[in-house]
Image 1 (cartoon, one colour):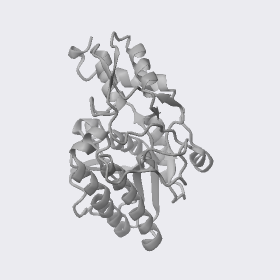
Image 2 (cartoon, helix red, strand yellow):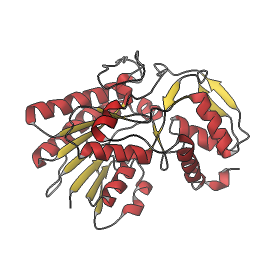
Image 3 (cartoon, rainbow, N blue to C red):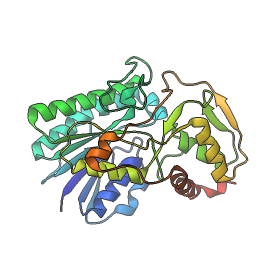
Image 4 (cartoon, rainbow, N blue to C red):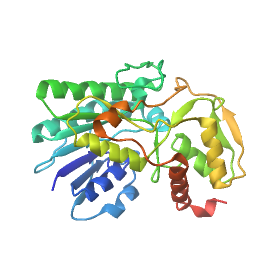
Amino acid sequence: MPRTLVTGGAGFLGSHLCEYLLKKGHEVIAMDNLLTGNIANIEHLQSEQFKFIKYDVTQYIYIAGEIDYVLHFASPASPLDYLQLPIQTLKVGALGTHKALGLALSKKATFLLASTSEIYGDPLIHPQHEDYWGHVNPVGPRGVYDEAKRFAEAITMAYHRYHHVDTKIVRIFNTYGPRMRPNDGRAIPTFVPQALKNEPITVFGDGSQTRSFCYVDDLVEGIYRLLVSDINDPVNIGNPQEMTIKQMAETVIRLTDSKSNIVFQDLPEDDPKIRQPDITRAKKLLDWEPKVDFEEGLSKTIAWFKTLDTGNYA
């Protein structure tokens, strides 16, 4: 039975990953300081094969016994979070990645870093492929997240080249599904509760900026395939089905049968205008591509949001 540590294991993506690994026969240790994670995300996983440790991974990480895999998913991940928690975001990207890599080195474990499409910044090429170096404002308000992840990638590759740690880097594009935190600043967990309450849907800018949304089950499958592969270079995992934010808001309104209307707000500083993954590398090397249609995944996500607080929803 492989023994695996998932930092950020009580978060949206981390909890789905823990669940998937348990189904694959892993013994899983989830570590999270619950800054943005939620213990409710992993309560259903309690078993002899699963353990939760509340801990800040920017501190020295000690785990007794063997560890086969270290998956580093600890970090605020939404603009609302990392703009309110800039120092914590930088620390977990730098110190947290360093501590998690140190554990992987000491245990001779495979290390996987959860990186992000945000390392491409507001891109000058479209779609974005892994060889693109990015267009990032390092001193802008979003720089705390972008540069934390760019540093995390750099130190991960340094541990691979200098210490010969078996490292993987997944660049995650916009992902959605059950267990997202309502109103966390990202589009879908903002729009869905608004639509269910028949409140105005708040779209930044004129809604023409694009995103590509991948359902969480597809994403986790891609991450696992990368984890057990022999690939050390970064790999994009995401859904290349691109749409405008306005189109996505209109789809939410239609699928919820909402009476909401769309209102427009000022576009945040350095907000990317386009975002679409080139997944050629994932297709070729991992035999992976997303399978869940956006409306199918969104319907499942809406159904989950309805379970949270149905008394406030129309």
